[in-house]
Image: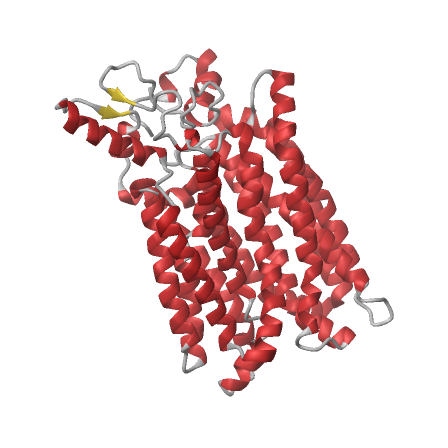
Amino acid sequence: MLESYPSIDSLPASSVVEDFAALNFDAEKDAGSGLNELSATDPNTVEFEPDDPENPLSWPAWRKWTILTLVSLMNMLGLIATVIIVPAAPQVLRDFRTDSALYQILLVSIWDLGEGCGPFFVAPLSELYGRMPVYHAGNALAIICSISAALSSNISMLIAFRFLNGFVMTALTLSPSIAGDLFRKEERGTAMAVSIGFQLIGPFIGPILGGYIAANLGWRWTIWVITIAVGVVASFSLIFCRETYQVKILERKTERLRKETGNQALMSKHHEAVNTTSVVQSLVRPVRMIFCAPIVGIISLYTAFSYGLSYLILTTLTEIMETTYQFGQGPVGLAFLGCAIGNVIGMLFYGLTSDRYIKHKQRQEGMLKPEHRLLPMILGSITLPLGLFLYGWTLNPHIHWIVPLIGTAIAGFSMLLSVLPTENYLVDVYELHSASAIAAGVILRAIFGAVFPLAGPPLYAEWGLGWGNSVFAFLAVAFIPVLVLLMKYGERIRASRRWYWDIGI
């Protein structure tokens, strides 16, 4: 806990709710820095001035959107790379003279396992050393791992480097946090729609590209194309991206002012928050958030469930469409357009409505609450089981193939509305440590994304596609009342000692 605050046990009972909420989460009274730490009453405390050009929130719009677009593109490329090899999996197995179904699944799920391990280090290190050093280092390592994967001489080497590739792709964790660094709460909805929307569209573009690339150039080119694209975006990132984490920017400003003024007593506004946090404490924070912060745990579990379903569809749709409708290797990639279209519609819906709704609630209630972000999540939680029912029960050669793909479009729409509001919510709640909160969700999503493709096919084989997808639909229905209660009582939960354990912030 921050030493600059009194222990919550020492506060009068009547002030616990108000003070605790201000301490950890709601920054409605924030003066514009976007961080709710110490107030600058001490003349030796360095903080941002109003409209300070060093404050990312005050940067010109072109700079903000350039940085966010580059990071979001890198995020999307990482997700495309995860699944672009799916249509080429039969080629890979033939080239390496194996017919193991396990290898076919591992080609995708091993990347997700890497993504699940990476955030343990990416988020805490970005909060200790800044976003950009971690981001650029991850991009460089991703290029090296991609080249190695493309040159693999056996299936084990390919799988090992795909795991490492997922591990070092930092944009997945950092993109939502960078959006939170750059945009104020009332502007953040559109920014998050771009940041996370790119991320969720990527997995559905990947198989479409992979199908045609593999058919015409071979499976290795599915990796080379992504490697080239990552190199281009990484090069532009080196040129245009600047540090966005306000804690590190203020540290640099403080150091500069000490040299200019000779006043060694100057301290950054966030000096206590940074200096009292050990490396070990930072590294374990994402996991502690999952188990010790109920809001993070609930939201991360639901988004991981939605994400796992999307990967189940991604990894099984090729075989299902080939066996049910006799799609060829190239055209089968078009089957993923249903999910992609649903994602695009969800991104546009959220981008056009989120900030307007937030401003409406601010005028209506006189303040911004993070829970205002969660209404689209409820809509997504309702439409998700509908899409799964339609998809599962219409996969039949006597029913036109467009019908189950409409089901995947509905599911894609709902999955985007599941992730976008929740990550925006976590950034609003845990502004200073938003990267760790996002990382907690990424860890669970990666685990579910790896496990669901392994668990789904046996379930389909045992119960059929109709009842197999219905099982997941019923589980999705079970989340609806929990999410409604979270939206209604989330503020009370955040403010109560009863629902709070030490999470190392």
